[in-house]
Structures are given as C-alpha cells and as structure tokens.
Image 1: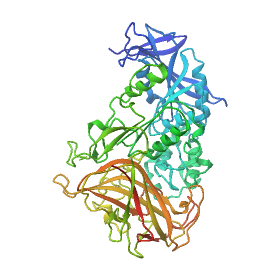
Image 2: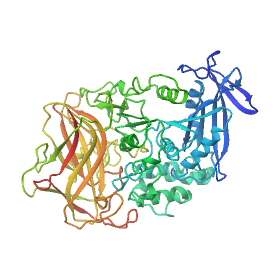
Image 3: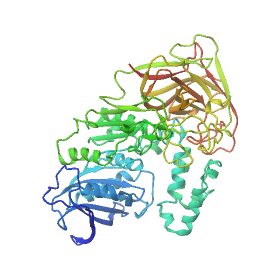
Image 4: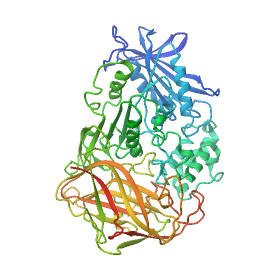
Amino acid sequence: MKRELAGTIRGRAWVLGFLFIAGMPLGSDATEALFEVAVEKDVMVPMRDGVRLATDIYLPVREGAAADERLPVILERRPYNKDGCASSGRYYAARGYAFVAQDTRGRYESEGVWHMLTDDGPDGCDTAAWIGSQPWSNGKIGMIGTSYIGGTQHAMAMAKAPELTTVIPVDAMSNLGYASMRYGGAFELRFWNWIMFSSPRGSRQVRDPGTAAVLKEMMDNRKAYLANLPLRRGTTPLKLAPEYQDWLVEAMKNGANNQFWEQNNIVDFPERYKDIPVYLVGGWYDSWAGNTTANFVALTKAIRGPVYLIMGPWIHGAQSGSAHGQVNFGADAAIKDHLGWRMEWYDHWLKGIDNKVGKEAPFATPVRIFVMGTGDGSKAADGRLNHGGYWRDEHEWPLARTEYTPYYLHADGGLSPSAPEIENASTQFTFDPRDPVPTIGGNISSGDEILLQGAWDQRGGPHVWNAPEPIPLSARNDVLVFQSEPLEQDLEVTGEIVVKLWGSSSALDTDWTAKLIDVYPPNPDFPGGFDLNIGDGILRARFRDSLKEEKLMEPGKVYEFAIRLYPTSNVFKRGHRIRVDVSSSNFPRFDINPNTGEPLNDHRRQVTAVNTVFHDRIHRSHILLPVIP
C-alpha cells in the first residue's frame, strides 16, 4: 500500500508517503520499506560566502510524526536537478535513513555561479556541517551518486569533511588532467558536448526564456558547431552562459596536467583523501574506467579505508544493464538492486550492522571484476553479439599473478609475442585532420547521437553519423592494422594496457591512437565476423615525455610514444585474433590535432602529416598485454 498525504512536522511543511510498518526500529536492516516518508522541499542552506543551495530532505516518519531518533544521513549533491533524487530519497528514508538531496552551486534552484567541481569541496563541507547540526542527524554521512555526482563525493572526501563517514563514487570524475577529460594531452569532446547540453539545462541563464531558447538552438545544432572548432570566447551563443564558456575554453587549451586540473586529482594527491571506507564502482566501457582503477591503487596505499573496487562490463552509469552497444554480456552482468546493494554498505558503516560486507559478494574481497568474453559468439535474443562473461573475486589490482606479455607489431601486419628481427622496417600513413577516423563505441559518456557508447563492431553504418557507409574502419588507409594469427587457446587479458610505439612525423605535432580489438571469426549468426572494440587510447605527441610539459617534435626524428589504453578484463577465445589498430585520430571521441604545433584550442590552420610507425629489430613497437595464466 502506498499513499500520499499532507502534513506538518516540527513546524515545517512536509509531504508524507510510503509504507509504514509499526513496531520496527529505525536501525533495522530489513530490506522492505518500513516507514512513511516526509519530504521537505527547497530548504535554502547557507554556504560560508552567503550563497544558498537548494536542498530537499527525506525523513522516515512514525505514526504521522518525525521520529526523535537521530539518524545516519545519505547525501547526494548533484548538478542535474535534485528532483531526480526522489526515488532514492524515498527508498532510503523508508528504511531508516535521512536522505538529503542538493542542487550544486549555480545549478537549477541553487544560488551562485557554477564552476566545474572547484566549489564542491567547500560547499560539501558547509552542507555536511549544516546536516550535522540538524535534530534528525546523528552526524554520520554517507554519499551516493554517479559521474559528476561521484565527483562531488571525491571533492568532499578530499576536503576531509568531519561528518563524512563513507562514500560510494560510481563512474566518478577525478584525475581530470590524466584521463577522461584530458587524455594523453588530447581533449575528450564529450565534455564539449556536456557543456553544450548543460548550459541550456539547469544553468542560471535559462531562467530567462529568451536566453534559454538561444542556448537550446545552439544545443540542437551541435554537429555544426563541432565542425567549426576551436571554440573562442565571444564567438558562439555560449557567451550567454559565460561561466560555461570560460571553463570550456580553458579546458580545451590546458593540455598539460597542471593546476587547472588539480581538483579531484587523487593520483597525485592521495594524502588529501579522508581515511574512510570507500567503494569504487566502474565499468570497462565507462569514460572514467582508468581513473577508477587508478584511484583504487592510489587510495589503498594512502588510507586504511578499507577501499573496495568493482568493475563490470558497463557503460557510463549503466550498472543495471547487461547489454551495451551491440554486445550482450549475459544477465549476470547487471546489478539489478542498485539501491539495495548500496544499503548493505551503508548499513555496515553508518549503522554498525554485521552483514555481508567483508563476507559475501559483492563485498567478499576488496576487488570484484567481470571477466568478459566467455560467450559463444552467437546472436543473443536481443540481436546482439553474445560476448558473455562472469564475475570473479580478487584481492588486489593489478592482479599479482599477471604476466606482462609484449605482442609485437610486424611489417606484414602481424602481431605476435615474437620480436621482429629485420632491419629498417616501418609503415607510413597520411593523417588528414579534415578526414579523421570516426569513433565507433568506446569509453564515452554524454554522447547521445554524437557518440556511441560501449561495445560495437568496428564498422560504419547509418548508426554512425560521421561514417554512414557500411565499411569497416580497417579498410581506411590511415588505420594501420596489426593482428595475430587465430589463437590456439583462450587467452585472458586483465589489467592496465599500454601500447609502445616508435614513430616519427612530418609535422611539429600530431596524435597517436591505438585500439585493442577482439576479432571474432565468421559464424552463421555473424557471417562477416565481428570486430569488437575492447579498449583505446591516445597520446598527443607534444606530451610524449611528460603530461606536465609540452615539447614539439623535430620533423622526421624518431621518438618513443607510450599510449595508455583503458583497463579491461577480456578472454580472447580460441580461434579469435588479437588486433591492434594504430592511427592518429578518433573523432569525435577526441579533439582533432591540426598538426601545426599551434597553441591548443587556438589554431587557425590544418596541415596533413605523414606519420611513420617503426617495427624492426631496433624499434620494437608493441602492445604490453596483462596476461592472466
């Protein structure tokens, strides 16, 4: 039975709802709803500078009145409208928690001016202090949320808010200068797309209908603006939302991992993180996958935690799904009770309940991973490739038993553990920034129709806006393909991956891209086979020696380049081939290098580059695979 009624509790206007079960204590760990829920909307919570943030409060109710017991609190701070927290707020409040949802600074109903994450540490601390002073709070706060909202958790943990007791950052924004915003010095255009979406949705400017209409028109014509990069101040309608324009212009020109990207930099500053229990959640096809595993490595060394990690076969924010892109990973891949499993963690650390944490999945060991690729390659009921997989518990990341195995690039397009012994072997290709290699799937978020997320056959078609012809990417002359012979036995690859290239260019600067592909042989359901993207990466040549310092190249000189791919766990089955594609663009996943050496986001020219990959006895270009015996 579920009902809604009006009421007044402690002199404030509330709305009540949900099931009430008499006689159950607020500290109960029962999974069913136990209480009615009182909701107070739009409480304006003051920050230290006088800005007020709009906040909703969800409380369990006993017999028409708020309970006197002080409760642990679950907090979600989001830029996407706190009204979206209603189901979570009611779920946890009905089970004996106070739940607080807040619009971050400058977003929706909150006052102030938005800045990318930089206010979320201080604002989080001020909000936590306010929560701790409320009569319904026991001073213990756990945080919840995904993506940017996961980033607000990291920001609050790095600000060491005294009331903060535990966090579950899912696909969370962090290490912005390393990967997922700037990646190898290149800019991930999904954040260009995010700004184009966010300024017309929830910014303070859209409170004016005329401005809202202009910004929406800009959003609706994103593809046309995408073709006219770089972005300059004052030249597009984004000037009507100046804080969004200013951040995006600066983000696109700051290629180095510098102070601009310091907020939420856990890898370089793990000592700033509060010593609390942390459960990191990520996906092999998530845009923040590399940062999620990097944070686990950094935090396990820096704090007692405990720190847990779970990595599934998911795209961004889709832990409840088991099929992503054109691939099905099996029903077990999904976490169906996405609120309930979190409550198990909160019950343990916020209520002191002895439960599954530390004993049973998904909390039995510090690391839980989904090993992809054990399906039979048939067409699943939903029409997708049955790639399959299974869950496995581990005790560390990277796995201690890893055998790092180089697979070398060969002049004939081969890829094998045998190193090349011939002299002076190389392959050249022409990179024209006016005709970049199109993106087909990968570690992407904020993509909608511009960027495809997840696992896809590396083949164009009407589903790829900038590659509508049904031809494989391997047919392009600017994609170098290196692949193994069909495998004689299954090979598991689990861990962090790097491609080491020796290369030269006719240009002062260029990009190097690499992509790992699981090549399915033809079968009756997929008679053309299936080229499944596993992970990719990029390196802007000017950042070849350091992500902190730019150095242009000397044309024609040979340099060593290390391209980090996203981490993964995949079984390349017997009969499959391991493939590495090398090129110089992946658009619109990453911004296009004009090859001119001009300052980032400030070029006026584009030049064609002739790029050379060396693969001989002296220059043994290879992919280093983390093989699990």
